[in-house]
Length: 147
Image (cartoon, rainbow, N blue to C red; front, side, top):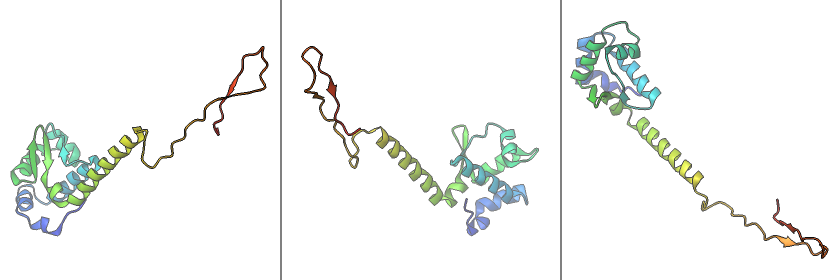
């Protein structure tokens, strides 16, 4: 996770720090770590207690959540919270995650594809009848493939 030097003087962070105090950077780092662990800028925070667990604190989750939202560091989005600060400072990391997911999807689709362009196709040779079979016996066939 990246924290750019100009973040410390950004109006969003300054507002958050003014409301929360000296622990503001610690909370930002812990939320960023959570984003990195989940590989998502979305945080599922259903109540203040969820945020308290994420931050490792005993109380004050609702005040911190309200400060994060009012400062513009976190945006409420459909029952979850979008960490805007994480996206702004970690665009390359997010891009790498998306590219990795796309490559994984492509690899899975190539695996299910039976006619890959660079794969060797082996055609099985036709079965040949052995000529030394007696007239009374049913002839048997041998598969002449290399394996």
